[in-house]
Image (cartoon, rainbow, N blue to C red; front, side):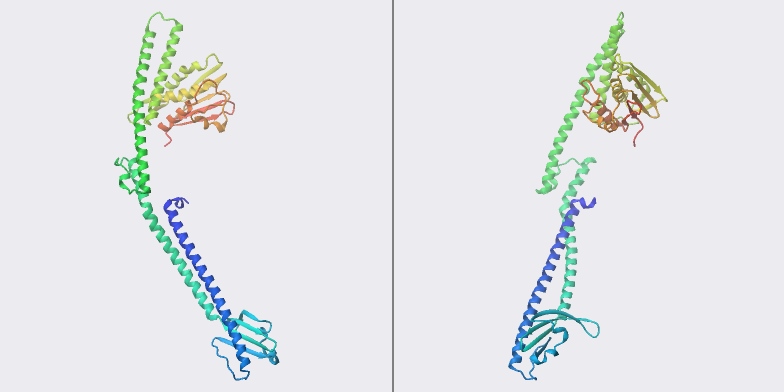
Length: 431
């Protein structure tokens, strides 16, 4: 089925079917016309012959008078000899009839019989049509051969035409693949004539130029964001560090400064993760940073406790085995912050349990939970859970999914049988 969808195969099949249909219609038209003309000619000949034969016998009533004819057998009887007419012919009235008889050898002999009955004379005119039927069969056979030959020729011509028609399109596709594989960066339209394929190549050139400009602007924006955001965040982090080191700071002020420090750290991590996503780049496994996932989980649990406020929620961390991944700690922190933060926000009471082990982190909560059919939808941009409150934009899980795609991780959501939801971040490579 896939081959039939290709434009080349459509041209070949359409051309072949058109040729086959055209020759078949021509053959049917020839057969029908031949049969009609032949019937009309034979019937007229027979009728004229029987009339002439009857007139001849009236003019020459003697027994020895012979009416000249060749493939025609004639019989005429007077009123006194009507009983001498062959029994099979007696039932026919005036007219022309198609009759098939079997001879002594068991072969069928078709013929036409022209009959003229008057009160005093009956005339019969028999015309052997075996040769005509043989000719008709030969004609049908020749037409079948012609239809087959012309159909094959149509398919061959269609295939040849399709190759010629599709050659520029295939060449255009090959040049586009060369761009993807780092081929020469020249204009496509210069290689084609000013036809439909040339117009398509020119449109692709224009689209490529606009896409290149957009990517360049995006690259410049990323560089600007990297510089403009990291600098003030570094200033904030340094200032907070100096303030925390100052003597005689009250406990209340110390807590506020630590919250600022955590927020600054989160902003720096999120900025780095978003820049990685915008560039669609990742560290090479041999050169990348190795992150202690347990340590990051502990930090994320503490940093996001502000989402709990005064809710009666117990946070439990279970470390089944150490876990390290080859990825920046900022990326791991952003992914886990969204999962743990959501568990905190959507759990009014009960517990949030975080398990680390077997190459993954599982975050379970006792909140209202989710519907199984909504689990995948929540990873789309702008989608939020039914119990969502506040001014969130529904981007957190979408960012986590994109980070997982970048690093070949897997993230999933599912409802818990006992209530609540469970989010799993699997760091094992999917490849």
